[in-house]
Image 1 (tube, rainbow, N blue to C red):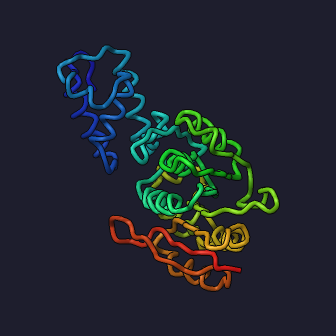
Image 2 (cartoon, helix red, strand yellow):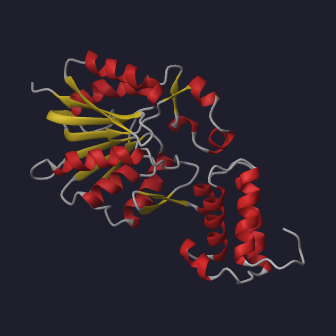
Image 3 (cartoon, one colour):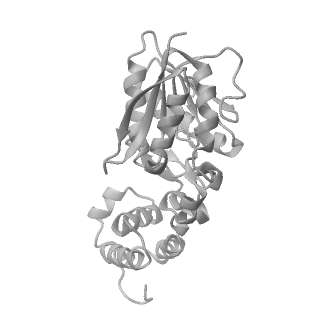
Length: 292
């Protein structure tokens, strides 16, 4: 941006989108709109009625800072402190992963299963992070009760903010736990859902720098194979599911077959369908607890 020239909203959007495209953004126009709306403290939709408005220098300075950081790879969600997921806005920080659209497939499947439990489903969200899965379930299934666990106290603080912001703190219990280890003895669930770390070390090394530099590694990387966390989760989940209860796990396409083999190897779990994402890749694996 050159000082002394006329910089109205329309021109700022065009310049920012072009700049971010040159610096590798996959969604430069959207990024530009979100960052300018943040700088102006308005909604994105409001920008289109303000194209001829000339923001003052304080706004332009704030935008320049955000654009610089975005060009360095910082996710937009961290820059503005929130992310839309399942048509709701959630607080996010570098203590939690940025929610991805692929996880909405897990949420849709979980909602369908939870609605089918007479009297209200008992649900456990393992590795809740920002709490998006737990919150969406509690909002969409009025009579379900959710236990949301995470090993990270910092992530649980963000999840607590989100449960309060969406008015479901009375139906979501947040618990610090390494998978299901800290849950009270004897507690069982109709549905266990998880978006666990499932990235292998080699896959992680090839991810965009913005992900590796800014998002929490521990929430992404499972180990050399990518299945290490799921290998630990499966027997714990099998022990905690009620008879006939369901398990849903988000996976990457690279480990889908390996996870299916792990499920088939546990005599307590019956493999179910795999849900594919919009690109046709396997994204959510499911299993059901057999009757004792």
